[in-house]
Length: 408
Image 1 (cartoon, rainbow, N blue to C red):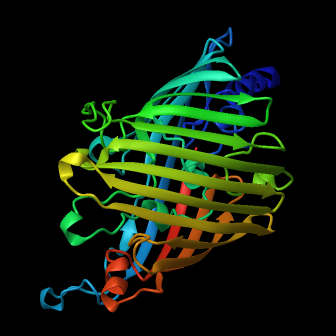
Image 2 (cartoon, rainbow, N blue to C red; image 1 turned 90 degrees about the vertical axis):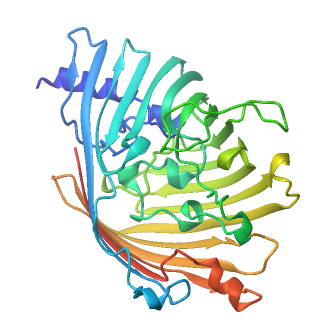
């Protein structure tokens, strides 16, 4: 391939947006929000005029999992074991394509063959950039909330996301049909976004609020507030040292110094089968300083029931984490995370503390990444033994994951 052609392709790919954040649209080495393309041109198709670029990609993750659960919640009469949900798994098997047309429209579509139902369609969106400061994205993509979720899939520090984001909350047993989690992830909707002055990023969007597993329209008008029962979300970021790449450590970025500070919030009107109105607030910090990666997040969720439920109580949940990664060798990254979650709500004492450690190895020249982690789920400060036992129901006390990832 001629040098001029290669440069043209890379320049075109630079403008292909991440589905996770508007600011990442201007990150020159990432094209699809699934796996970083840093330093790897791969395979692309381009018209002679250069007004259309089409690029296929894939990401496959194969993992070995070990999970040990304590006795609470296990019924020995049914021969339930402490070791469960263990063995081998395929977390993601993503095949997709991304591209750009006419210098203004970017697009992305991907299928996750490891999922089922509506989640098979992982992403499907197009983005129209009128200018750097203003663009519109429509389709299925990541909602603007949480640095952990918005990180490129193949670039996370640990193979498992923080449990404070992914675990459902605990409510009184009579209300257990309503079990939201703080993270919002992929959804269908529309957002406007942009980058102002190369420093300030914004995203404001409207989504179904039904998550990644639903690809149909089924919402109504709120009986309480008389507005569409949708997810209203926004995120604002400040990047004093230029655009923050959506990675949590890469051997190709050991000389960079980037920082991000962000605030986000959302309101999911009549979520959980039209039974609750869920409000989420989040604050995030990330710093990529040569061999070091640091990040911290704090998030809050308020769950209030709709009038038709005839329940006056509201529930408040708080979670967060701090994590760090450091390259002790050019292709070896050590990782650590402390995750906290008051899963049983602020009206009860006690919380989950969930430390984790890991190591990542990036193979040279073949796009392979090996990750390993161990996590412990502890319980602290509960009033009663019953509260303590209920708080980690469904969560493994000891868990280990070894994952090998290939990307193209």
